[in-house]
Length: 377
Picture 1 (cartoon, rainbow, N blue to C red):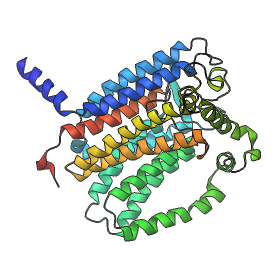
Picture 2 (picture 1 turned 180 degrees about the horizontal axis):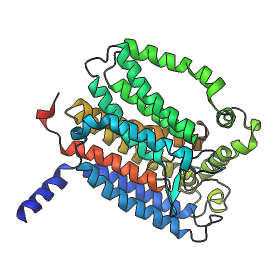
Picture 3 (picture 1 turned 90 degrees about the vertical axis):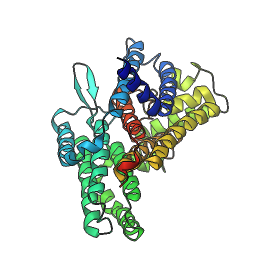
Picture 4 (picture 1 turned 180 degrees about the vertical axis):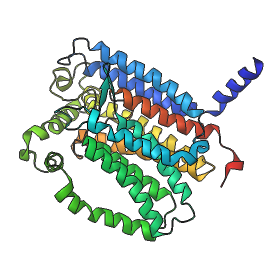
């Protein structure tokens, strides 16, 4: 019994409780904001149910944090091809089981027994693991074009499955940013990385012409001319009005007209930041950004302390994932990014997103926990 207590004490001493504390602060901010945003939701008979679901997701997420921190992914590294195929199969299942709605424009969810799961959210962690391991396997050949092509196909096939079988452009962009972050940090020479990025930018032209659906094109174009589709532009415009209405100190908690009277759409999910800015003002918005920045910094700090390349790349992948979601979501709310349905980490309502993010942070905590000089390679 004494040995178990000692082991438990050592665990809590070595795991990254600072990272968990930052995540819990963000979750608490999210709960307060979600309560305000969901008091008068149409078509919801019991708004408190959403708070209960979010609280449940946080509890499960904290459990996932501790469980993930105990799993040494390095021991399962050789299974990365199996995990990669399983991820593709999970994304393929959206073709047959995926659900969404007119407001989302995609089929990103699988629902059963009243519970919705977003496979691409879970798939982000699998993608980070498989891509980090693939880079590690090719670590001695990263200066070759063949290695770069392999890694590119690894990412593009996954992104292609998401777009084809769910139509979720927002998730595709997040995966793409994770890919670029990890590739940049992998050690690929700049003489290959820079031309590769330029080639990727050039590929945007045929992608725009032949790949994107008209609906997704309009989501981008209305940033520059809302009159092209007032219906699609509506969400972004109302979000900007809400942000501006908050001014410096906000309209007051539970007092925001855009939030309370149902004018601001998706106010507890995609536009939770706009709701916060309306009721808490510029000060509240900056505070949320500061805590999110602290979260990303802590993840990247752990990357700088990692003893092996695989662990380092896992940290970079999670950091890239969080940074992408923060920049896209806040950009959506401010009208400088297209509205593509990305939630704000740990702040927006969404069980799958919350649990996945806590699990990702648990992986980082596990790397912090197992730092050993003998693993340096």
